[in-house]
Length: 228
Image 1 (spheres, rainbow, N blue to C red):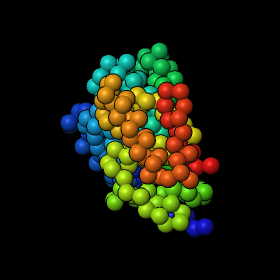
Image 2 (cartoon, rainbow, N blue to C red; image 1 turned 90 degrees about the horizontal axis):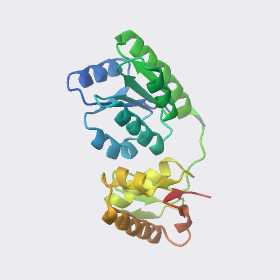
Image 3 (cartoon, rainbow, N blue to C red; image 1 turned 180 degrees about the horizontal axis):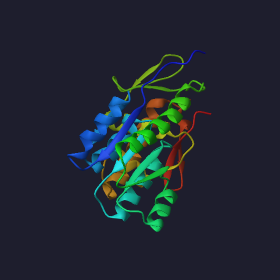
Image 4 (tube, one colour; image 1 turned 135 degrees about the vertical axis):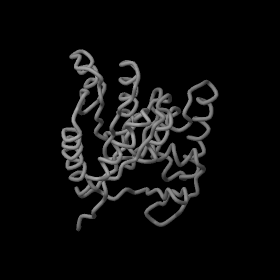
């Protein structure tokens, strides 16, 4: 099967209004697609929809908040994460790697070094994109919010149903906790959101039909997606 070329998408989460455009410009100059998000909360909500090949986090926040953000992104996908740190503190660097960060970039760093790191990681992402994969039994059409089965049957989904299904399908077999799903799909967490999640899961299974409702499996404290 011939490989298809796909532009590497780099999600830049940067709450500094002067720095964010510069990072985006440098990355685009390398022929990559830079997606800039200046709101951490909005970035968390958009992550399952964008599904980038590389994530760069550069936020002015306490270390605990940076670590929490990295953990949430790691829970959503296997996408490589590059995290900017304001100083070379060994303990903080170790905590970042333990949280799932793939590379720490300690400030200050020259544009040349930053771009070299981006280029290296984008090459790895490009290799994974070109690797042959088994065609999924269920496909999603984001433009029309449809779930399409192998026999061509199209199932119309609501916005919440589509976001939830896409999140689960992004990491087959991984058990997303209720909190992870709610944060990503709704952007908040509360008792009412737990009830809403159960309702959306119920509707999704019903729409997929009895022959495919097994795809969304319930685990203690969460849900996962399986095609087999």
